[in-house]
Image 1 (cartoon, rainbow, N blue to C red):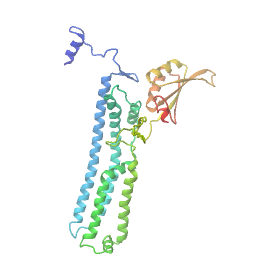
Image 2 (image 1 turned 60 degrees about the vertical axis):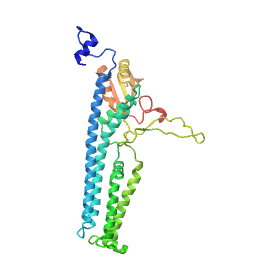
Image 3 (image 1 turned 180 degrees about the vertical axis):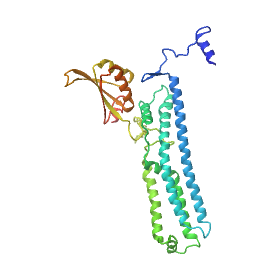
Image 4 (image 1 turned 90 degrees about the vertical axis):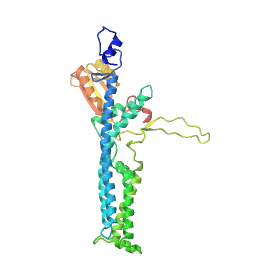
Length: 361
């Protein structure tokens, strides 16, 4: 149906065509802008596609680094077993270069998680909520997403990223390199008849064989330990880890399910949203507080105060807010009362409606 046909069907022939939404259509009102639901959804879809594309680009860079490590490993093993000319030091060199690739991939994986975190947040708190009526997104998803855009930070630590890439790809590469190195010492140029012969073959120049073997064993052991120790680091959702987890327990005797405990967020950026406390000293108390309640959807409390220099009584408005709302508060107060005095200070923790639930403290 074309736009002209739609206008004719809605308004009838001969009537002026209107492109404005109905007056009673719900809109998003934010900082003076009025955005229709369709416009907001379209913007979110385009933003989601852009973040998916960013994540895919960094995912391809991860695959490129892994491919380099695999190709290098295959080439070094082939050279080592090519005959008398191949030396076991090529495998040790391959271990060092593979470690360099792992460090490089760790950094790339942190950037990948930065974009992937936004994608997961939109998927779980916007699109998933849209599929389960009534549409009810998580109360802080928009704030979390806005803060991530304004102040980007890695949602995953270096050790967690290092451990993930090590367990998923590089640990197997190290295992194959270690086995190939041990086979080279045992089989070339002929089968070793004693462990002392293996130790002697492991020497590199003036470095004795026992020291080379010790360093290789310590290195491979350290990689295995890191892979195991970092298993429980799960600050970021990764590619397929769940957004939420629910604890379900069984009764010991009747084997009936207990009531589900409240759903607890599993995936959140490891640094919590910055929460602030604002003090607004103004003579237009009612007007400022009405706009804070209506436009910002934040609670506000009035406290009586007195200016000690002038001796004049003023009202002090107390309001808890997040870092993304500070600019909106400044514009709002300046529009109503340019002579007002605004103090913004960090809050250690804010509990209650609109912030972290009080019962989860």
